[in-house]
Amino acid sequence: MEKTSEINTPEGRSASEVIASLQRARKNLRIYPSNNPIYKRTVEETYKKFMEFFQYMDDLELRIQRSEFVLGEEVVYAGTDKEENLALFFFRDGLRSLTFNVKMTQDELLKFLNVMAADLDSEDVEEDLVTLLWEKDFVSIKYKVDDSVLVEDESFQQQAEEKAKENPTSEGVMQQAVEEAPADEEAAPIAPMPVTNEDLEKLARDIEVYGKDSVEKLTDILFDMLYASADIDEFKDVARIMQNSVEYSAENNDLKGALKIFSRVKDVIQKSKSEKVKQTLIDVLSSAGSGGLMKIIGTRLDTKEGIKDEDFKEYVSVLGTGAIPKLIELLGNLQTIQGRKKAIMALTFVGRRDIKAVAKGLADQRWFVVRNVVLVLRETKDKKALEYIARALGHEEPRVRREAIKGISDLKGLKYIDRLVDHLHDEDQGVKVSAAAALGKLRNMMGLDALIARVTEKAMLEEDPVFLRSSSRP
Image 1 (spheres, rainbow, N blue to C red):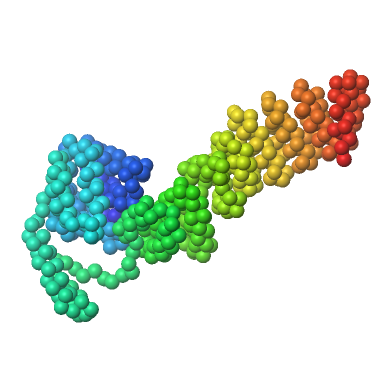
Image 2 (cartoon, rainbow, N blue to C red):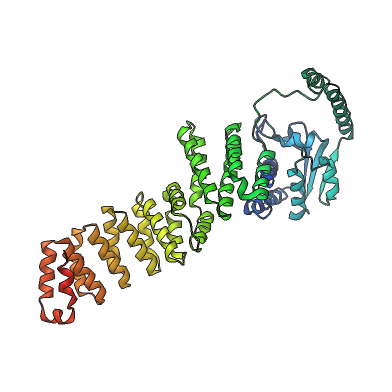
């Protein structure tokens, strides 16, 4: 939307926001099913914009011109050639004014939005816009129609159809029909066909109707639409459909379908020179780590069938570091050992790029989550993980302390030998054995001296006969 002049009044600015909200609603209601959170939020936000306007006036009366909405003497909307012209949408069907009253309910607004979102060019919709409005029998929404326009348009359409029947393949017929159009109808310049809301609506409908078997074909269509996008807004619309397609595929046990989309998106990112395009597609990739998709993945991991290793590894390869908190959350919610193993593998792979983000999981209140986070830090093989692993040496749960000791041993954390020596006096027998074994493995003179002094004490030998065996392991 573009304004031809500055809007000076607060009610004018509010009316402009209402129209912008209507335009977004028309697009979203075509794309998303009625049970989708975005659909519901769109309706609520649009109604909120109306309520804000009604603080200024009890009636929002908009005069409709070919490309403009006018409130009083103020133009509050001016359409452009680059986007769908909402004023023209009403104007071409003969509407000359729309009035919304303060008593309008959200349900009544929803009915109006559904009329706006109807595909009037579809064979399934026989009525025109005016008829659809009339059928709703609105109480708080009024409109005025110029009947002469409807008669004129009907006559012109009939003439054009008769000419087409005479010679349906003749380009001259098309040119003649344009030349005989009413004077106020300007012929639009020929331009590349952009992605339309109808395209997006049909795609969303196809995904719901045809399901898993059509995902591959729909993926091809999505990318065709992506390349045909006329501007960045249309590009973003298609990208949002891609995100929905990914989630739909995962919900229907078709992770491969989602992976194909991710794979092709990565290819486009590598080839694109536009930063806006790259960022939009990076957002699509980031949906791989979204809470919704991660929950679906988690549910699958906990099933008997699980997820194939190659599919899961490919999924993990798409994840960015922003997915780390969700992976930690997933790790805490999984109920099966097989599921937790895969989550640990995923967290290890992604965590190598951001050790600090993984370490935040050490603050979790569940000891088993902390233990697994320590395990992940150890599996990264990164020396930077040592300072975080060392923090877990003081955890109240012995199994966490044992895992931390093993981490320091595997990563050769000589800096923390004194801490390991301290754990030779740990109250837990298993921790003491782990500390002794770690000191023996590190083979550091300071550690061995402390260990020898400890294990040569008669009391310790009697109390912990396993110590000497642990410390003498090669």
